[in-house]
Image (cartoon, rainbow, N blue to C red; front, top):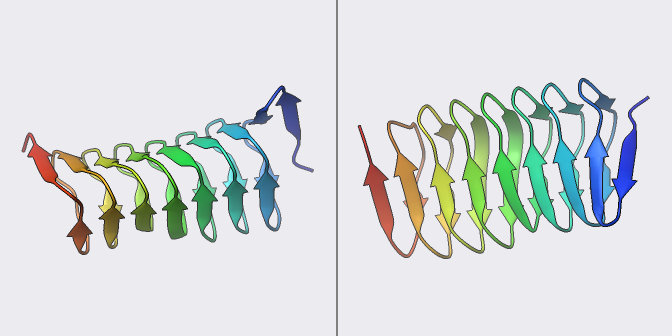
Length: 137
């Protein structure tokens, strides 16, 4: 059984946990490496999804940092900024703020209401943002 620990407005999952079904967190959610969600993940605040974790369906959140080598099979919808770290695979992203994509990211369409920053080589669908900056190779 998956466990969530609360400290103030921040919630913490335990490393290696599996969450069967949809998860809703009212606040910030910090998820360590190797944590898996078999449904939707809905976080009203900031989501920090640890390396090598996975989400079977989509994510809605205030803002997100998606760790390296994470797999998200559904769309990410954030009201704020989204950062996707190295070698993550994400269905698509729609962000109310800026989106940062790190090297090796594979993503479908990305829509950012603010800037879109790409570090290094990625694979993607359509990229839409107020400004698009590509840094590095």
